Image (tube, rainbow, N blue to C red; front, side, top):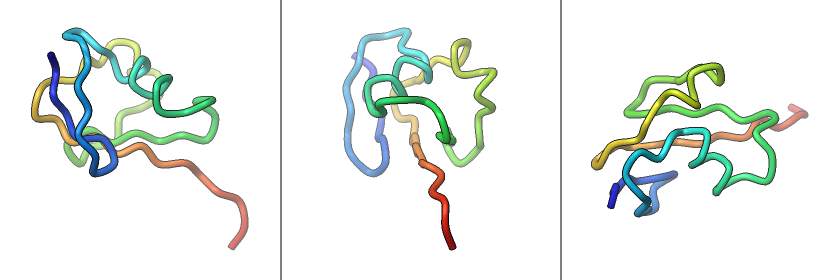
Length: 67
């Protein structure tokens, strides 16, 4: 199992899980989503190729309109 922290909550997933797969589990749609892995923003174009590893800290943020 891959043990990571997503938005402050523990999450266990299968080895080889990509950021794209993780986002799909946490969000209805990837539109307006930004992801940081261990404090570094990961471009959406890299989500499919970026595997999460045990101990990673993942932050998934949704953009909101308004001010």
